[in-house]
Image 1 (cartoon, helix red, strand yellow):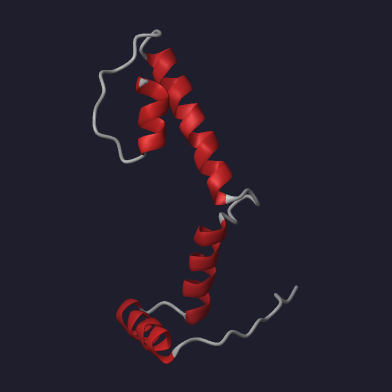
Image 2 (spheres, rainbow, N blue to C red):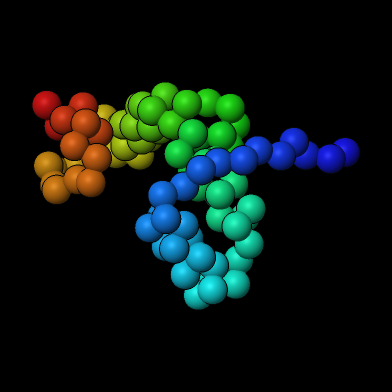
Length: 89
């Protein structure tokens, strides 16, 4: 089954960056664009990236509670401030 094809217009500077990246990595334009769009759109399972992050934060909070037997870890710097706030406040 053939995949649909699309066309896009890029600013010259962005196209130059894409071409340099392709030369450096040896990956195809198609592979780079598909990877970038999948990550941006959260297209791994059809779920929006924001919704996936919210679900993962909730799951992490539940896991911490189970692992520590309702005894939460002391506050520590966190890369996801909303996760930190949900757990330690």
